[in-house]
Image 1 (tube, rainbow, N blue to C red):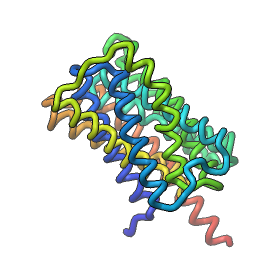
Image 2 (image 1 turned 90 degrees about the vertical axis):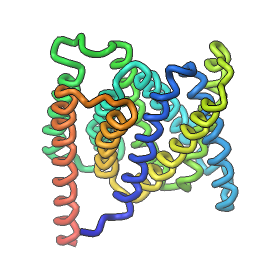
Image 3 (image 1 turned 180 degrees about the horizontal axis):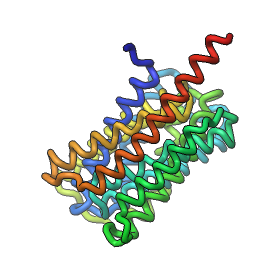
Image 4 (image 1 turned 120 degrees about the horizontal axis):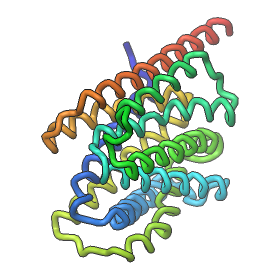
Length: 289
C-alpha cells in the first residue's frame, strides 16, 4: 500500500519530535527548562530564516496577526511539554500529549467545518480513559504539575494544528514555521535569564540537537497539515508514542509500565478508528463525485 505524502510527512515529523523529547529529557537534569526553551527557539529561528530566504519568500507572510497567534500557541504548547518531560517518564508524557488528535478533530469540526464522524466520540471516550489509566486510577502515580503541564500542551497544540490548517490556505509552510521561533525567542528570553547556567560543551551539542530535531518536526508537520485533513494528519502523530517507548527503553533503560501500555492502547485504538472512518468517508465522497 502506497502511503500519501501527508502521512510520510507526519511520520518524519513524529520522529523529529520524539527525538526532541528524548534530548530534552537528557538535558533537563543539566539545564533549566527556560534555558532549553530559549536555545531551541534561537536555533530554530536561525534555521527557519535561512530556509525562508533560500526559498525566495518574504518572511512576514500575508496575515501577520494569525501567524503570531500560531507562534504564541506553539510557544505555549512546547514550553508546557518541556516542563512535563522534565517531570514525567518520557513515554507517559508523550502518550498523554498525543491525546491532541482527538481534541483537534473536535476543533476542526467547530472552526473549520470538517466533518465529525461518530467515531470521534468513541475516540474521545477512549482518549479520556487512556489518560486516566496513565495518570493511574488513584491520581497519585504521576507528578500533578507534570500532568497539568502536558494537558496544557495538549490544549495549545490542538489549537495550533487548526490554526496551521487555516493559515496554509494563504501562507507558505516555511513562513508558518518561521513565526514559531520569531514569537518564542523574545518570550523565552526573560525566563532564561532568571536561572541561567553556563552550558558545558556537551550541553551546547544537546541544545543544538534539540533545535534541529524541533525544526525537522515543525517543517514536516506544517507540510503535512497543508495537504492533509487535520484529524487524519494528527492521528499519524501517534507514532511518537512508539518512538518514545523505544527511546525510553534504549536511552534510559526504563521499560514502559503496564498502565502506560494500557492507556496508549486505548488512545491509539480510538485514533486509528477515527483515521479509518475518515478515510472511508473520503473514499465514498470521491466515488459519488
